[in-house]
Length: 167
Image (spheres, rainbow, N blue to C red):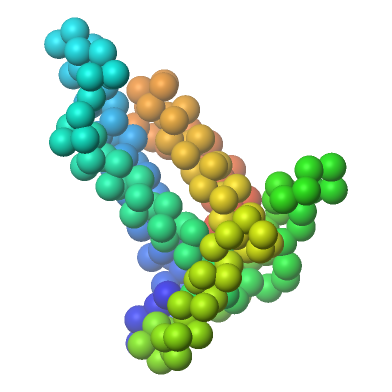
């Protein structure tokens, strides 16, 4: 989504930055929390919601923004998604974003319908959102495992899932 007066390109760049920043926050906070657990001899199975909810919230923010980028109520993508022929429902390619919509100028009932209808795995955009989410979580998990606060594989992730045809 974009704000009134904001170009689609500006909104897209802001959205990508938002996803990356919140993924970085998740990774950094998870690394710190896990290092503390190990240092204090508190295995992760003793982690409480109170201790983990802050960094889980960061992941949720990143995933929500990423998944919205596949909703026809939020964006237009230039082409359709391509499904891997040998794995039905598994997306191996995604179309670039060509337009971001202004929420305040939409019919909110139709917006909700688009979000609902594209949110399941029986929709090509839902499948794309699920697979992009898996990829983003993989970037984070590998980064956490390597204790690397720079996102391992971010550039490849961005190239595959956060493409734009905007100028």
